[in-house]
Length: 212
Ligand SMILES: Cc1cc2nc3c(=O)[nH]c(=O)nc-3n(C[C@H](O)[C@H](O)[C@H](O)COP(=O)(O)O)c2cc1C
Image (tube, rainbow, N blue to C red; front, side):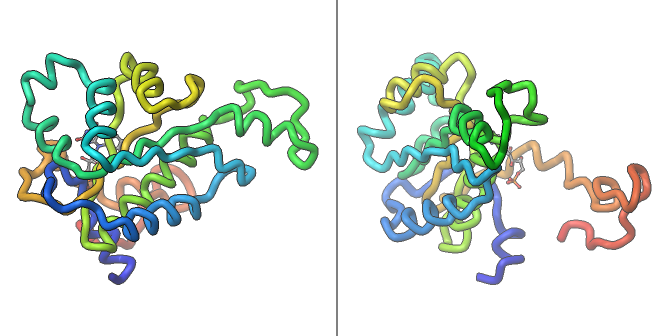
């Protein structure tokens, strides 16, 4: 698919055909693309835990969601739980602090305050986007969603992941099933003239096709 079309077509998909697994070669391609993501200092402080079997996904859902919500099976959860594959995206802060203490970076401390934003999470988020775009390119769909803060430790334990990792989010992937449009989209896309500034903040970017 043409790149612009992949970008335009990407939507967060919240309901999947549970009977159609993600082909292993698609999954491998998505993961390979994720590893092409940029990372500060080429730290690559990310890990992707792929959950494809019902048992693996069940363990994740039990840890990551509230039992009451599962009992209620609200619309969102019912839809997202139909995804045949989940990729839990973890970031590793320590990998960045260590990398930047190497001689070519020259930081003698590992002080987190020196980081303008948590690059470990930024980089892992970029990798997740590459997976979402790959899914679209392959005719599938995906959703990036978060794990509630109070459920993170339990989720890491259920995955057998080290407790110091951060769960940046989860990429659900599969063949889309009919879904309802997200109510958030009613907000409308902010036009380029509003979000892009030419030369200095407040001078609107002149071009752009709204809705493109
Ligand atoms: C960091 C992040 C967290 C998100 N978390 C959720 C989530 O927990 N549940 C959900 O349904 N959608 C989630 N979304 C999807 C957004 O709602 C969606 O991207 C937005 O409404 C725009 O729609 P679109 O991506 O389909 O164009 C998240 C998106 C991002 C980037």
